[in-house]
Image (cartoon, rainbow, N blue to C red):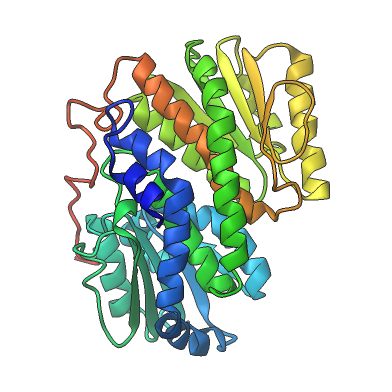
Length: 380
């Protein structure tokens, strides 16, 4: 991290919130994540290479909440890239129904994501996998060196701790989401090969930060009652993360939903009213993009939604935020800049509602690290 970037990441937040600072630091924190992976490359690759050489290896991406949506975003792309099935299964599903989620006789690599790494489900999922799967290995990606996941060292595990600044202090995960997503993408794609892409991704995030803030600020001021995020392929998981971000930062005041553009027509479209904002993440893939633009055109022609916003890397007619410099990028690389408008919109809505973004739920009903979870012994 350069001195100027470090100064930005340690200076007092402009609006008084850690959340805002952590959104703004992402161009720098992504590059810092790449540098950390390069320094640790030999150890990570020595752990992973023999596992991926096993054709029967089952790869499961897991986490809870935002950490689960990392897996949902990456799984389709990694399945294609690795030429094997990669599944996204939340820790909450593993813990509550281990008999359905774990396979005793199938060699498994459990990839665990955790900002704090201390949620009860994170630790329990690792322990259940160890107890119920004959041959299991753990790749743990976390932002907290003091968390339970970071302490899960063993012969069958590899723990990757990301830069300190990615351990977000705000309630809503922002730079921790992009850093852990990037780390997994780089580890499975090839850390050295990701270096030039890291620069482009970082620049794309910086461009989106500069381009999107004013637009989402205006939209936040319109007081929408409902917001829907739509995305195809890797953007389905991103849509779920975007919907959660707004729900969290608005303290549940805004009804949020997510779907794919094609799936949205099959009933969920009835959510659209004059007080609804629909946001569509537009793919760079030639075929997928056509379907994404179809729903944008359809929603605008319906004239029912309060607003329809397209987020894209190539020009789109009508109201849109079009970033520069990534018109030829793979969709998986667009995950990082595309999440920025959703993060900023959630922040702006939180402020417009008179909430404190770092702790939007003042009652303590929900917390930065989940509380109140009882882990029950299976078959007890």
